[in-house]
Structure formats: C-alpha cells, structure tokens
Length: 56
Image (cartoon, rainbow, N blue to C red; front, side):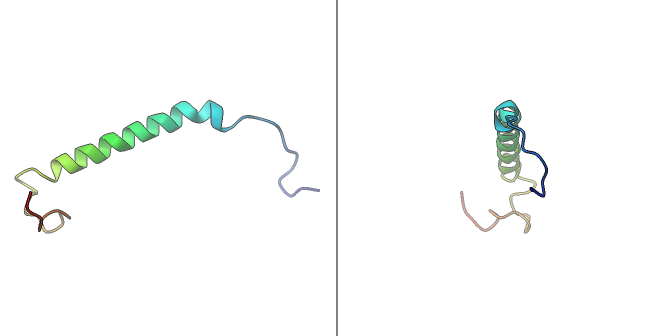
C-alpha cells in the first residue's frame, strides 16, 4: 500500500506550462530592470552594488 494514496494519471506539467513560461518572462524582466537600475548614477557608487568596483 502506498503512503501517498492512489495514483491518478493526471497531467501536471502540460497544463502548467503557460505559468512556467510567464514566470520565466517575469524573472527575466525583473533581472533586466535590476541590472539597469544598478547602473544609474544614484547607485553606481553604492557599496551594496556588486558592480561598484568595476569600470564599465
């Protein structure tokens, strides 16, 4: 007897594919925005900026 109960042949990944794709698009957008904002004059020399010591 299984501890998880009866197995049903329900598809999980295929119906969730649009949500996975939307998540990737949102994460890409947030990453792009964060990289762009870290290069602005206000945060260019901030010690919390990981690119503060690099010359671009």
